[in-house]
Length: 189
Image (cartoon, rainbow, N blue to C red; front, side, top):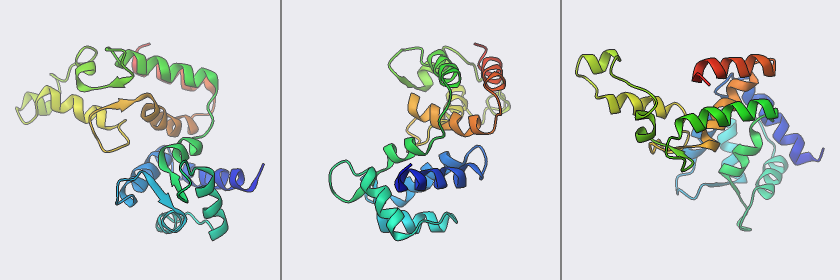
């Protein structure tokens, strides 16, 4: 394992020690740090951001991480690629059941889940705030979707965002059998 891989493993362990939402929370935090909307961070921004979260990298580690995920030679790391690398590896069984749940939601088959897709699968009519008139059924579905939407809460969830969400959950479930049973029950697969 080279030093960058070791650094990524160190960050992954620190993120996962924060519970099921560790990597997803890190993704949201990085997106807030990305003030110019470039979807990238330089080594200094990476170090300062991680330090705010109590995750420590020295200068050489931060520079190595940036170099590994620098797509255009600018000296900055690409956030999406970096966050994907941080996700803990999952078994094929876990990946398959996550993909099956996503496919159930993605009624249009376009690779993106939207409120329109959810309308065909779930109903929010029984939600207390819909019954009281405070929210519409679409409001309920949008808020449900926001749980998985890790980027700018744009009302669209990609398979990668869905996997990011479940990678944190997966890390807290010991066996493939338990994870598959949980997903199968939760999504009625």
